[in-house]
Amino acid sequence: MNNEPVAWNGKPLQANTITFNNINSDWVMQITADRKIIVNENVEVSDAAQAVLDAVQNLLVTPHPAKTLTAEEINQVAKECKWDYDEMNVVDFARAILRKAQEK
Image (cartoon, rainbow, N blue to C red; front, top):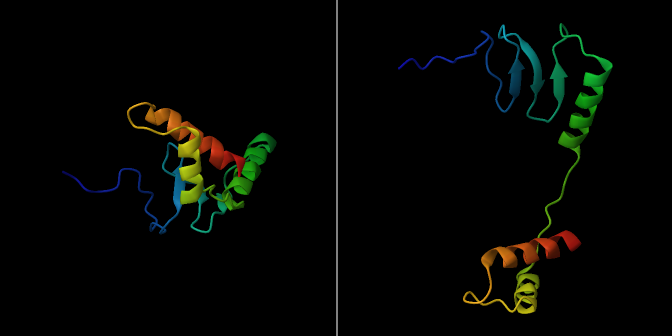
């Protein structure tokens, strides 16, 4: 078995960086560890493509806090659903928990 990289472009790999290559293995775009999008200066980017890159960049840097429930809130949902393993489908309980989290 050959353990050489399949699409290696001859440059050292950067830790925690995603690199997108074209069919010739030339790098086109990178997403760095600090969540920045870098486009190779030799790549022509249309206005539409730039708009997509800008939107993705905003998604990468905008924090999206996790919605969590306390044990008390989970217990309350279980009471509201009259949680009983014999009577209620686990999926229904999970959906109820998700609805409660989305309310926060």
